[in-house]
Image (tube, rainbow, N blue to C red; front, side, top):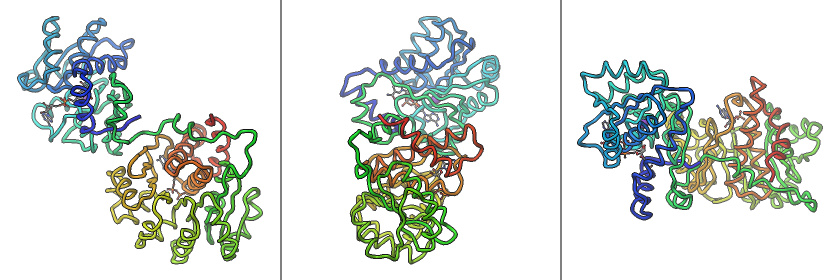
Length: 498
Ligand SMILES: NC(=O)C1=CN([C@@H]2O[C@H](COP(=O)(O)OP(=O)(O)OC[C@H]3O[C@@H](n4cnc5c(N)ncnc54)[C@H](O)[C@@H]3O)[C@@H](O)[C@H]2O)[C@@H](O)CC1
Ligand SMILES: Nc1ncnc2c1ncn2[C@@H]1O[C@H](COP(=O)(O)OP(=O)(O)O)[C@@H](O)[C@H]1O
Ligand SMILES: [K+]
């Protein structure tokens, strides 16, 4: 699914009209018919349409006609100056007039009447503002939205709940509290903001007849990951496959008190299908884990010669889980980067130790994947956690472009970007918010990179599968732990492999 802003909608609009000669009224009618499918006409009879005077309002007027044609009781309210009505809205307005479908122009005098109609209705359809909202909502517009919110049974918003800035998710004074939002072509970027989730309800993104190649040409290269993309990237095991076809990976992880992180990241890579997996750690961690890890090998990190040989031959390396935020961790990371050529996935203390030394990332462009959570990203960038949370796509893209790395910014709707293409992960939930989950993710991504997926796709597919497993398990488990996820990896890989 594509993600877009107000501006991308405008650019697409104008390309369709000017370059491809699709009249706007045609797209509007497609939008009307697409939205109509989601009006739940089987279970509802009374509809109130509240339209503004822009094209979002025009969608509403078209819907009023379609609902009337299907035998529904429809009341139409228009808020705004008729003389300012957009061209296409005017066309739909004139059709309503010619068909004797009454419309009410909202003013201070009939607000009480609007309130009664909203109360009596089964569904209010909100078409006041869409992607064209551009300033604080005041006056009569404010009152209308307030009346709808206070008195509705259900509200369905067309394209955007009126009041939300589609680009950044800011609420401009007041906002419709939608039960469902039927959006067109793009999942609006503003919907990604956590504070906006309470207003958008269920979001449906519908097509309005714009061919795929045009969308591809004008999209912002921002997407919500879909399952087909993941399936297309999972490598088939054919009958001639050998373990070397599935990658040799090394995990640098663990320290005293954090042996679990080493175990989890290593075991995740094993279960994800890596051909050969080695945990590289301090001797005391090795002594604890070598009996617990059956399939993976272990190597004493102080055995310089063997470590050097291993990392020079590796297909991917995972670094940082439970290693401690110390100078020593930084020295080890530097050594690993300077003595290997493969992709390196860095998490946790591997990131913390880079706080004032990000030049190390700059020295190794196009081979690093970093997987910070909000706190780690705050330490790395110097931005506050709340700034990162509210601007997560921009912050991740900026960092990825500057340091030429893949950034996977963890949390609800994890962001994955190489600075050019951006994916939002739709899987996972808060049952996964517990220690060790990030270590599992690192193991999965390292394994995928070692199996030959591109760095970007390793992170995209890793996040998807990790969250998919967690979400499925959470149907039966109150808390999903890392070991629960690890056990499920091979089953889900089997389900997804093409
Ligand atoms: N290609 C597309 O994406 C299509 C989009 N359509 C619809 O068109 C919408 C965009 O239409 P528009 O660009 O006309 O914009 P809107 O309909 O969202 O609103 C613009 C109008 O509201 C006014 N306005 C903005 N902020 C205001 C405020 N705070 N207080 C009072 N008035 C305010 C503007 O001056 C303008 O008159 C989309 O959201 C969608 O619903 C469809 O009709 C057809 C195709
Ligand atoms: N509310 C949530 N919704 C979706 N995924 C979540 C949520 N909370 C945590 N996760 C996922 O769980 C993992 C936690 O990783 P991290 O914060 O690094 O934990 P740890 O360091 O304890 O292993 C991340 O992949 C994150 O995206
Ligand atoms: K709307």
